[in-house]
Image (cartoon, rainbow, N blue to C red; front, side, top):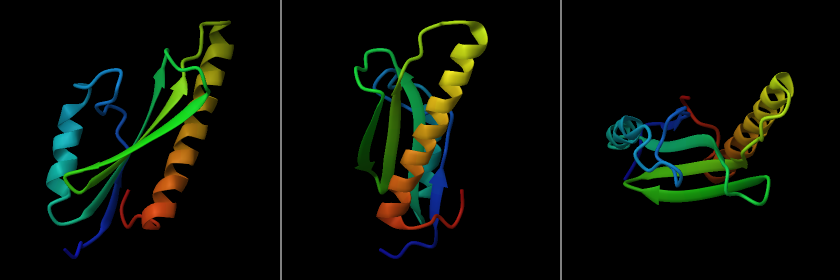
Length: 111
């Protein structure tokens, strides 16, 4: 099948192992977009049960390549410190996931 474009979706809510119903509407939207396009989803979220700092989990379902980057949940320290550490984890997660998508499918046509 020939696809029109490669679309990268970056939802803040998306089903993941911690909450399989979180943001189901985004998964349905991705399925609709995948009818005529190559669709990748990049989602970054925390996981309090992780032992390592970052884990990338990939899957393909209904022509949608999903890349979920889990990062170790930051414990509440001082208010500003916790937010800064969390922000840094999220940024590193997006960078790693985006690079993985580019390595597999090239630069997206639309984000």
